[in-house]
Length: 196
Length: 200
Image (cartoon, rainbow over all chains, first blue to last red; front, side, top):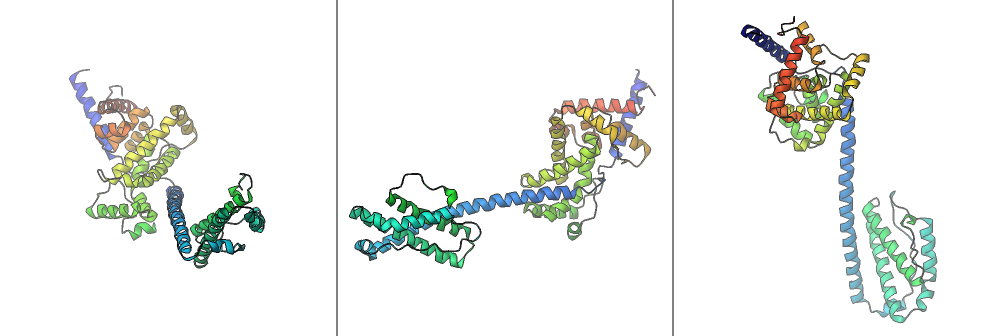
């Protein structure tokens, strides 16, 4: 290949590159591709929204539970200051019916209701078998828990579909059940969470 | 299309159009809205850039169906990564980078790329007529016959005007390799088009 051939080849190559640059950069797709993109975007946005809402809800639940717990303690301390310890001994623990609007997110199962009623019906009898100091502690705890349940129910009456309040209420019912089961001296076969 | 009209942008825009300050400003506003998960703004961006992204995908894959999938995937990835676009390059260039990654990713997944492409080519209308003359159409057809490495470099460098550094970065190869692949592509194309080989 001589110099003339090289020059000719270079010229042709330049022509090739020139042709390439004349090609349109944009080519219209044969069909509209946006619907497929839009569908994926909507799913992605829903996932992101769900993740964000879930994270927010979890954070709020933690705050509420901690706040609620502190509130219960504060309420109990206040009650303690106002009410002599003998009050717990003097007042029989009347079973309060389950109340509150649980919305559509939570339901108290039949097993839970049955266990609660059974335990509550035997509570006074079992308490009598315990030492006086223990009786006082138990009565104090149950009064606190039931006061918290009342407070949450009041809040739920204003916000019946507040899932965080619903969760807090259920948590309080579980606490009540736990105390009564301890009194009853049942084995540690705790009720499954799914029962509530 | 409503979003596009609402944004005051032209109905279609290709890479060959002059990018005016107004359109850049419009694009920035659309980007800001899209970053806030405004899908109508993102649709407007899609309408602005889809032809250029699809053109790149079509030329890199050599197949209509693959190009459509890659284009959709590129825009979906762009949506999820919008917060990572810092504006160091134009949005169109950034989209091209995303699209190239998508194409390469899909090709890597297929160990039998050549066989698959050829199999599809046998049953589907592969090449769209995109040129404004017979010789450009011939060039498009010849591009599809190039080995993938040479084709990718030629498309990015010769058709879309990216430098060897940019091409190498996009394809994850050295700039020197990009130059070598371009040389190879030009030689093969010239042979196919009976240009400059002395064999015509």
